[in-house]
Structures are given as structure tokens and as C-alpha cells.
Image (cartoon, rainbow, N blue to C red; front, side, top):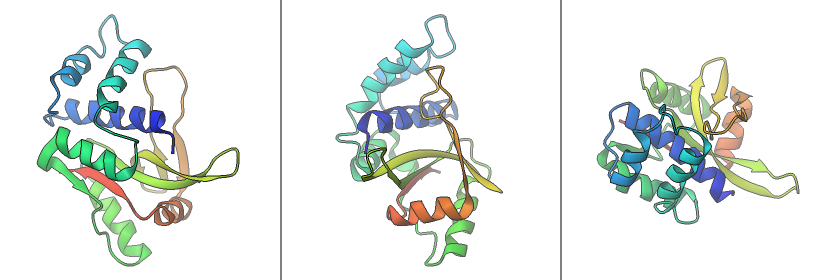
Length: 169
């Protein structure tokens, strides 16, 4: 698990939640998020936002990220929703969660590092139709890191990671 990448992913999620009207209980975060789109918007602003958010994430594990987001977003957080006990039910539940929401769905998947070890990765899922579309976790730099997965591939790596997820209501 890369705690820095997780912090960027969660920061992007929080910026989108803030823009969608969710109350973020961090004056420092809100003050910085309000500057996005201004003259000083860019990678330095992104790093400042990540530094504020990282204070709430501990080691970046799913449990600590969920706890941190519950502190920042309160009752709006729905963590580890039960989508059912089979793949079809889980697929339908995920699609219901994403339908009509202005914020992405956070999901943890199991991936293999370039060195060959398995690790959990937090992703911003924005679409779950024909393909699973995962957002760029760091829109503050000029590197496009968005990805696409087949539905079956995504469900497999999400299920292997324990079906961990977070959404907003």
C-alpha cells in the first residue's frame, strides 16, 4: 500500500465531496480547497491539500482512511456497504451506489507491485457501466493516471481485497 498515493486519492475524493456540497470538518482543508481554480492552483496547492488530509489517514490502511473520512464528513459516510453475497448482487449494488451521485466511490483493490508483492490500493471509481473507469488520483499534476478495467477483472481484485469501499449519502 502506498500511503502517499492513498492520500492523493482521498484528497481528490474530499475535494469532489466539498464541491458537491458535503461539509468537510477541516477549516484548513476547506480554505485550501476554495483556492482550486485560482491563480495559485496547481501541484503546490495539491501538495498542501494532501498534507492536511494525511493528518487524518494514519498509515493509509482502509480502516484508518474510513475512520478519518468519518471524522471529516460525519454521517455522510457509508463504509463497507453490504452489496450482497454473490457477484451479480454486488454488481447491482455498486451501480445503485454510483447512480445519480456527484462523488465517486472509493474502493480498495488488490494489486501487484512491480517487485511482485501484493498490496491494497485505494481507487476513485467514477463509472461502472460497460467498463470500470477509475479516476486519476492526483489531478494536481500533469500525469494522467486514469485507468479502465473490465467489470469481471475489477470485481475480482476488489473481492480479493475484501470488498472494502466507501461512498457518500
